[in-house]
Structure formats: structure tokens, C-alpha cells
Length: 123
Image (cartoon, rainbow, N blue to C red):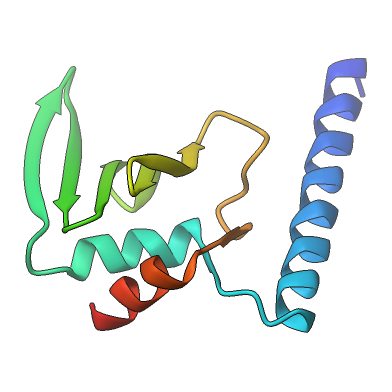
């Protein structure tokens, strides 16, 4: 195995450990949180989500945009894969997921503030 493959495997393992520790901590401290995957499902199901579909270079992409009173979400997908997801609450970004980055995993919990949690629970 090359050095890069070892490095990639090590980074993946570290990110999984970080996500598990974060999830356990949020659960123990009863901190409201949501994963990128759960947030994506919520955006897709919301009745006010604006959906645009485009075919670029023979690949079909779907773009989602959701605006509520204090919150804004933007997501790009290719079939079932989430390519990008950005979430803002009160004009502050609380999530910036990119499928090509190592910093966020799809199941990493994201801390929510109380207002955003209640907004998402209404969906």
C-alpha cells in the first residue's frame, strides 16, 4: 500500500472517531444535534423547498434551496449523493458540508441552537 492510501485510511479512521465522540458527548449532555444526512432529508421533504434539476456534461444534478424566516439552506445532489450542503441560521453559517472534504462525515452530528431545532421539528 502506498503512503497516500495509509494516510487516507488514517484520516478516515480519525474522522469516524471524532464523529462518534461528538455524538456521544451531545447525547450525554442532551445537546440538540442533527447529521448532514438527516438535515438533507428534512430539506428534501419541506414543502417550501425550491427544487431545480439540471443535466451538466451528461450528469443529472438536483439543487435545493429552502428559505424560512431566520434560516437558509442550499444543497446540491447527484442521484442520492449529497455533494454540498450549507445551512445558515440568523445569518450565521452552522454547517458547510462538501462531499470531497474530510472534515465532515455524512453522519457527523451538528450542534443546533434551540430556535433552529424547533424550526426543524415543525417540518
